[in-house]
Image (cartoon, rainbow, N blue to C red; front, side, top):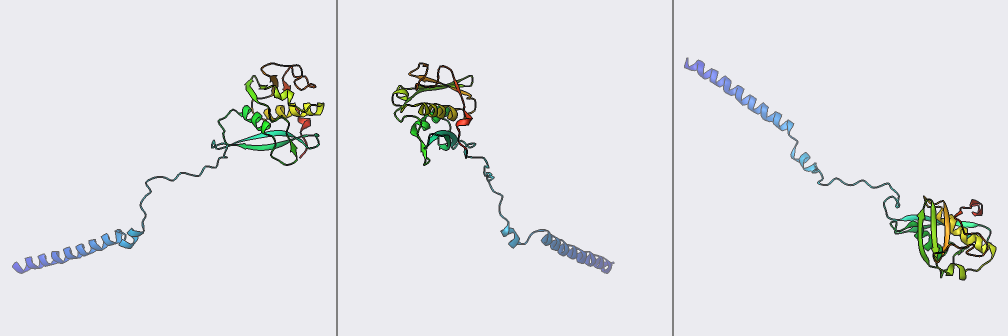
Length: 199
């Protein structure tokens, strides 16, 4: 009886050892080896931001405006694209300020005397009211062509902006019959596409 119990014990003992070895082997198969663990990179703490595909104007970095200056022969108005670094500024005032600065492209001629000051500009019901200092009149070079190109340089440049369809000129806060002597300026003036030269 003792021998039989010893044999049963021995059989269970051998089976137990076998199961223990087999279990350890399966554990090793399930767990990645130390080298593989070292290769795994930890999850990033901060998710990287995607690069924006928007234009600089969308990001609030810069503003693009189109200005019109006379060509050298006083035949046409020619567009000049200008980049402004202050997108929060009043766009109509920016346009007038850049026209007063004059053109940057070779072959273009200024249309507004450099001594002019912008007193005020505001937009109401699609009309931009532009109030210039007296120098807009007194420092202007004159002539019917000069009159036309100065007025429509301002009008065509401002009507590039959304919400502006016409321009009312004022001198020192007053509407005058013909601020530059030839064109009627008692009412708002609309854009003239026919003055823009072909590319």
